[in-house]
Image 1 (tube, rainbow, N blue to C red):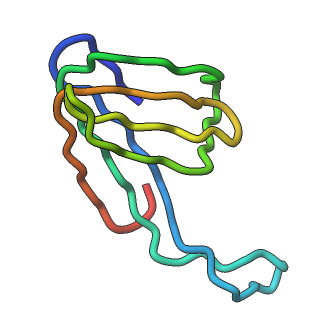
Image 2: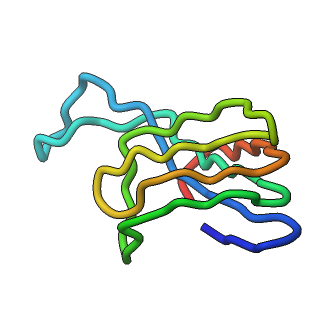
Length: 97
C-alpha cells in the first residue's frame, strides 16, 4: 500500500483460486495467481486500522460514490477500513508477485 495525499496512491494485492485438490503435504492446491493493483487518484477519505507487518484481507468491495469511489477492506489479519478516491483504475498481472 502506497498512500499519497495528492497524485496517485496504490493498493497491491496477491490473490488466487483455492481448488478442491490437496497436494502431497496436505495443503490445498492454489491456482490462477494474479496481482491486482488498484491505482487511486486524489484520495479524499481514509479510515484504516490494524496495519502491521502482514496484512491479510478477507474481502474487498468497491463502490461508486458521489465523490468517486470507495474501497472497503474486510480485514482478516492486519489492515481493515476504507479508502475513498476521485478516480480508481485496476491493473491485473497474471502470476505470483
